Image 1 (cartoon, rainbow, N blue to C red):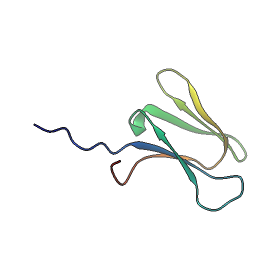
Image 2 (image 1 turned 90 degrees about the horizontal axis):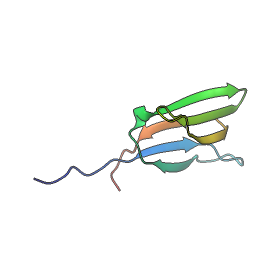
Image 3 (image 1 turned 45 degrees about the vertical axis):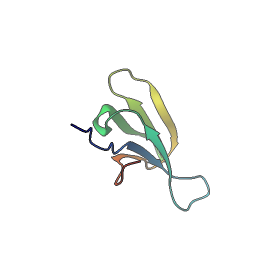
Image 4 (image 1 turned 180 degrees about the vertical axis):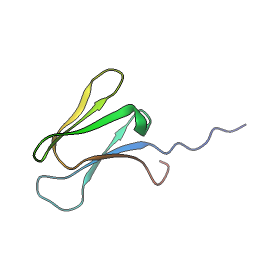
Length: 70
């Protein structure tokens, strides 16, 4: 039996210069992350079960499953 092709979790966040957002591949499923708007245009993304902060910066940000495997 073969393993399904993984669709990775992506963190999408804006660039400081505008344009298309940047993406970061994350190791856990999308539901494992907490996305919070902390102040004005500042956002934070952390791992729910450890509290580890993965992103702190301009937003808005979103954690999604990639639309394609890679």
